Length: 167
Image (cartoon, rainbow, N blue to C red; front, side, top):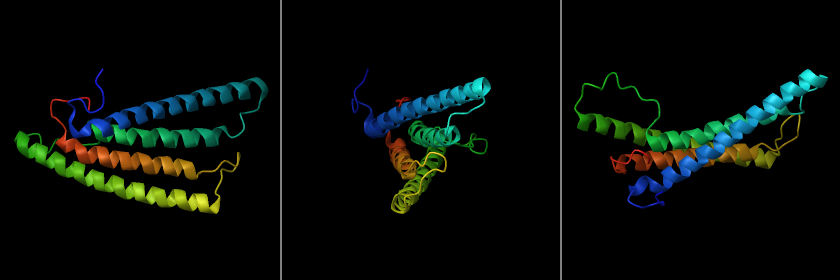
């Protein structure tokens, strides 16, 4: 197993962070699925759902989705339409891909900033969920961190070693 930074170019740290962030997001999504199963089973057995299950599943789904953006950006797996550029020379295709990655990095940074502002406002106003009374600012904070990481991953991706497919 390689260590961060061993011959992997500038995408090493963002790629490593994005990969681990995605694993955590997957674990959170799995926990949400198990909670849903438990709630349905409890409803079937005694007619009562687990209190706040819909809120917890919503928050967990948001976290899992946020976690996936950075991983996708680090792998260059964002939505891309190649049907119009497939016939172009490879160098031109790479230049177009780089432009789109840099634009995506800018969008991610903008979304990170907006989510940070949202998290700050949710914290300041004390906004909580309806059923459990759970604070919601931390989910927006996780989203801000995820989009910041996605922007960083997209920014360094064009400069990563082309032979490294696991960036």
